[in-house]
Length: 95
Image 1 (spheres, rainbow, N blue to C red):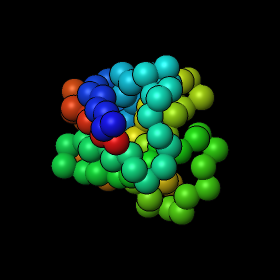
Image 2: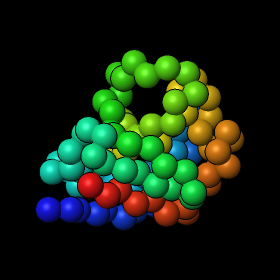
Image 3: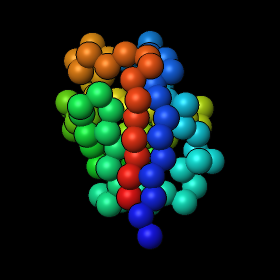
Image 4: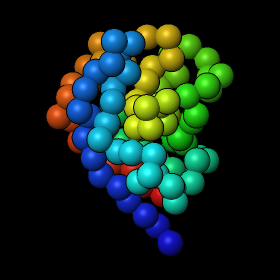
């Protein structure tokens, strides 16, 4: 059965990661594999990674931060500056 969650970017972390209002609890039943698509402000990625991921530089990905919130990041760069995404931008997770 397909599922969908909606939220928004609520802050930009010092690292440039985009902090959302979607908690780890809300993601409990969401698969972590490539069947999950995360879209925000015209940008998309697949899968949800742990905070200690080993993805290569410039990879746009979604991860559950140590604080327990979904964050969008650009590995080694500021996702906010690189992609131009700001707080208030909607985010959709579908699987």
